[in-house]
Image 1 (cartoon, rainbow, N blue to C red):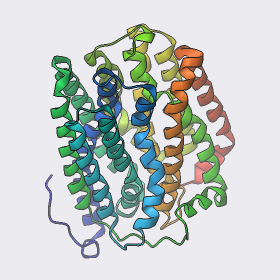
Image 2: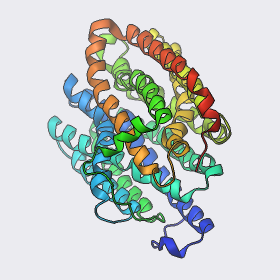
Image 3: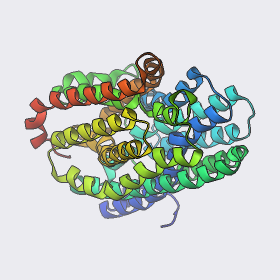
Image 4: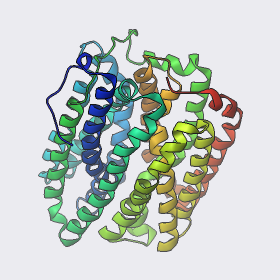
Length: 411
């Protein structure tokens, strides 16, 4: 793998476009793995253990990636007015991430740390529709899941490794977080370079007068909108527990108060290792299987994992729950990133993805805020039970959609 100077899209053959995109995406996936470990473990861990952050600040840090998803629709709308390439806008967003992480690395104020971490991870997520649109243009439909899975495996493997190494560094001296976040920032810059080098078409000008015009597709395409509704229920049940997992393992009121190594093992290393091992399996299923049935299986796996995670304070039970969550995330990563390519008409992949990403952003932004409130009212165990029940409801709602999943295909 190597970076080469950016080539003009129209000068390349279809095979060359696929190969070049794949090579750049491997680099992007590796650097994204490091950034992913920061979002999953280090940002909240530092906020809790080093800065002693209160619930609101913790919620905002946890919600930052999802704020970026919501704002991606605005970015896509206004970016389309520039007639720039999709890869250029993806690179700009990742560059902002890198700059903010470098500033956060060396601040001594909780609020400055939180502010720049939040901006960094908003920018990291805001680029998602551009990347998915590039996949839709550049990867052949019959092998899209299989090709994308290679960079995803690399990303997950790097996340697991960097989670373990980073937590080991923090275990020795938490003051070393400055060097850790400096490294995160440099990885964001390198990720920006990898995205910029991808062959890319120019953005199509938005046909809508306002940035939320793409939301009409959720109403006009009945099947697409219904799947989004079930995903809303399932996704909220999953996302409101994400920051609570770190809090459950670290905050004194739950009685576990795990070390940095223990938290990283449960939150990052175990689930990410299983994701890495099983992504190729789920990618093959995504390319060949009825998508709706696949989504139902993933929902139930998530539900069982979350239930086990919060039902007990026994490390082995929590570890088993974490493992199930990792297995579900292996398939969920493929499905979340690529499922709109099975539903969107030609030329509408970015628009459909912006709807999906923005709705994920809404529930991901509200989820931590509601989750921190709810866990204080009903307790961690009941959060696990309620989340599992919501997953089951979302799965049952998908049964009528199975017949549509048979004929939905990539374009």
